[in-house]
Image (cartoon, rainbow, N blue to C red; front, side):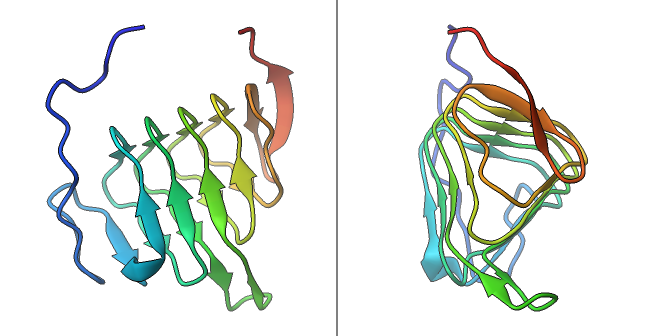
Length: 133
């Protein structure tokens, strides 16, 4: 496996302001960001109840990650585990985890946990297949 980044540096993140990569975090104190992550432009993270993005996570552009929802009054910590990949335009709702090495397809709605080593997609996201180790 080749390394994606040879000179990755922790991004400069300010509360409610877009980064130089054009993504935004609200409630920055609730965000834990791992190393060698890649967050696509125009993505939004609301970390009021905690968002943990572990190492080597890739998040596509235009994704929305909500640890709180005013639509249905839900809240909960979100975990994006090592080496998972989130396709562009995906929404992740409060209290869910995406497992290690898992892939979530573009335009998905993640409203329940996705286990390790699977491909999932859809509205709502469902596991489609297991990945070989």
